[in-house]
Length: 237
Image (cartoon, rainbow, N blue to C red; front, top):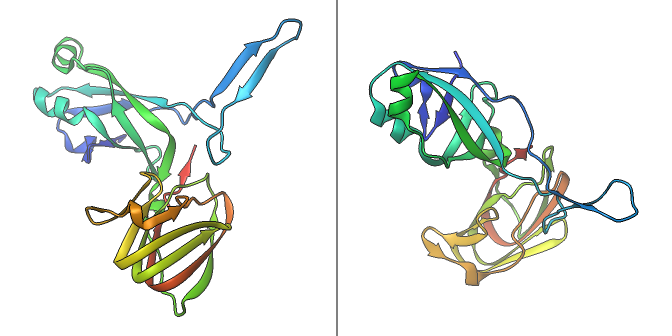
């Protein structure tokens, strides 16, 4: 049976609820500005790119048709609200950062026809579940190097570095430094934050937030490091 998972709840666990249809395997739209130029055939196309030189994409909508023959309207309304990861049973190896922005008159719809369509507004990239598994390194010397192969699109990883003192990270010759590290420090390139637990450590960092480009990424570490954990957050379009 088809299912979706949203707000950490599987539709199969809701009595009387059925998924009639799932979204097609479509891709987001690349952000392009088209301008007509007098005396020139066709359009002048300007493709928008981000700070890493990657193409920019619009959010993508994913529609799910649902039938509900129960009467617990509050359960359905609480389930289908807010922002959460969305997993679809026809692509169970990945998830989307999704939100439901429109108001759903669930009780009215169910009383009338029992069937309704949910529109999820999704971040254009899907995140592979395998990318949430940490890659762990335990160095044996103060300066060491490794290579991470990225088979997908550019990713924004989260690093957790256990160590003491000043620590340097260089990915493809792009430097990031951490100062006065005590026990550990975390760096989240997606959130653009550096912290330790609940403590903001932004003043202890300099340089760019690390990213992993498609292909080979040469990473060099320097400093008194006990362990490095990298959650790569592999993502695809």
